[in-house]
Image 1 (cartoon, rainbow over the protein chains, first blue to last red):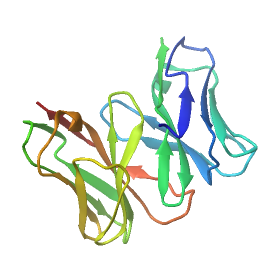
Image 2 (cartoon, rainbow over the protein chains, first blue to last red):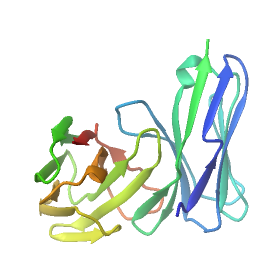
Image 3 (cartoon, rainbow over the protein chains, first blue to last red):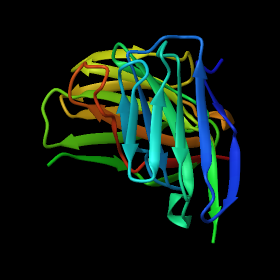
Image 4 (cartoon, chains in turn blue, brown):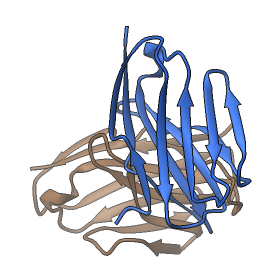
Length: 109
Length: 114
């Protein structure tokens, strides 16, 4: 059973469009991290959100942490082909991360 | 700077054969170390983690085992591989116990069991 549910599983959009990926859980986490993974490589951290209600912006990427620290979203504005990849959310508790199943994002030129 | 190495990069093994995957970290001391398995295009399943030499915690009962013989070395093993052991194996490290600590991942090992 996945502790973190990500939706949608797949997302294919045209360059310049916006997209949102959701990460939901019934559990409370100390923090929530978002990673991006290219095929055949390990995931790379994009951002960590810690405080309920927190919003972080990283250029065209906006990350939100829910007030109850159970859910999060990733919004990409004006997506580019370079944004293509597998986006993973992960909830932190104790020494460990619990990962969602991932959202495969494809941005067509 | 810190670096994490995994080898081999790719491995094809017959069912019933043994397995040994190695992970080493450079440039840090006493890291927390992790082994994950990932199915194609999917999320990561935590297999083992270690907070110190000889200390191994198993998350999922399975055909695999892990060992940490040195501070910066983490080994994933199996005595007899199953078809279901195929996947992408990732090693990761963190520097502390804080919930905001970044996990740094190695390049991974693609294992195919035939």
